[in-house]
Structure formats: structure tokens, C-alpha cells
Image (tube, rainbow, N blue to C red; front, side, top):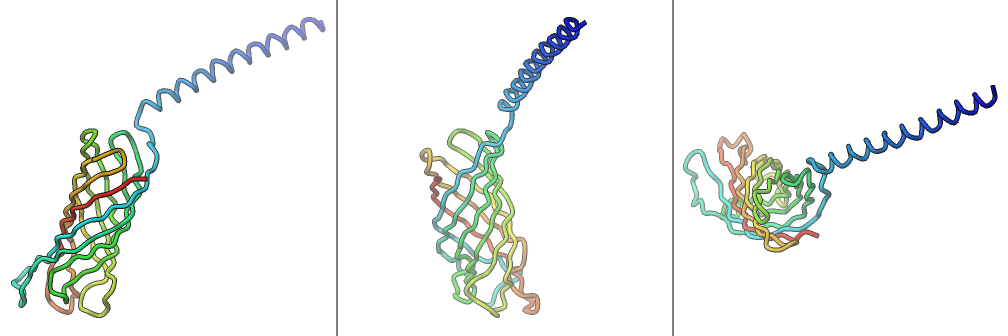
Length: 196
């Protein structure tokens, strides 16, 4: 009887051991399959900056000369790889925009969320929303917050260096409602960036 119990226990352990090997093989296979799919690709950080060409689009003819403003932008970003072809780029940047007249200067701290798509090894396109907080001026008849959309194209110069071109169009009126004036900000960014 003792031999029968011992034999049953040993047989049970050997069966348990074989089933563990099969389960671990299945788990390993599922991990291999997942790695071939669209998996998280990691995070890179970087800086970008460059040249702004911006202007205000008034609904009616303004009572001043409305010339574009040439200025700069500079900022930081994180590139979060969601797959081999798609990444998410949250950014924070300072951007000097608006029109050329000093009263119409719009200096913003901006937070675009850029959805980036890979077209080829060297070319990426992207688009996304952007929120802007006005800095430098107070009580000037211009709203403190602005909301816009941004789209652009990026060209890879080396493993870490890239150049890009973006266009931003404002969705909201930049002026306070009590002024009864409506204008939307638009901006072209010509930039260069470096990934760490």
C-alpha cells in the first residue's frame, strides 16, 4: 500500500512538472507573438526651436496695418513610441506669435499634443490639439487662453537630429468678448530639434 501511495505521488509530481513546462512554453510563445505586434517602443526626450512667422486673421478689416510677426520658439518634448509607426509627442514651448504691431504681440507658453505617424525612415507627419497660455501682458484686451490645432511634417537628418515645418491655426478669438473684435492667430514654425 505504501508503494502504491508513493508511486501515485511521484506520478502526480512528474505530471505537474510536465504541465508546468507546457504552460511556460505557451506563455513564452504568447510573449513572442506580442513582441511582433504593435507594442510600446519606449520614450525619448528632446528639444526643438526655430523661427516663427505669424499673423492675426481678422473677421473684418482692422483699423491698423496688420503685418505678420517674425520671431522665435523654443521648447521641450517627449516622444512616446506607441508602435513602430505611431508615437505621441507632448510638448511644452515658448512661442512668440501674433502680429507685428506691439499691441498685437502674443507671447505664449504652449502645450501641443502631437500625434506623429511614420511615412518612411526619414519622413514623419503629425497633427494634434494645442492649448496656449498668454504670458508677459495683463489687462490688454487679449484672452489669457487660446486653443488651436497644429499639423506638420518632420524630416530626419540623423539618428538624433531632425528638421520640421508646422502650421498652427487658432480655433478661438484672441480678443476679449467686450471689445467686439474677432481675430484668430495663425503661425508657421520652421524648426530644428535634437533627441537625447
